[in-house]
Length: 84
Image (cartoon, rainbow, N blue to C red):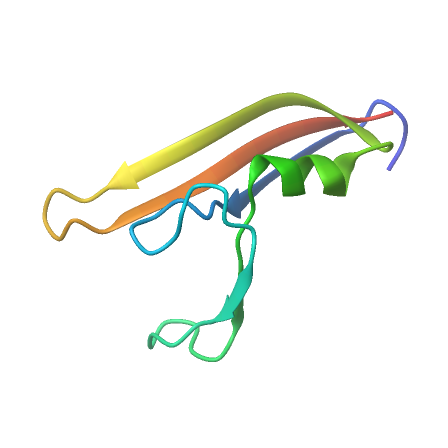
């Protein structure tokens, strides 16, 4: 990527009813959707570590959603970073 280029990505936060907010681990998916794949969780420290020295974070938003119907909760980081 060229200097000044922008990168957008969104990743799964560790913040849900089964994990604490700063979870940054991995686990094998056991539900039917994506069964057997690896789910990686990201916290603020892990995001910074992955981008350090190569990108400057311009925007970081943690979106948390909770269903009013079945009380499922999930969170995702939305990140915009600039190549330095």
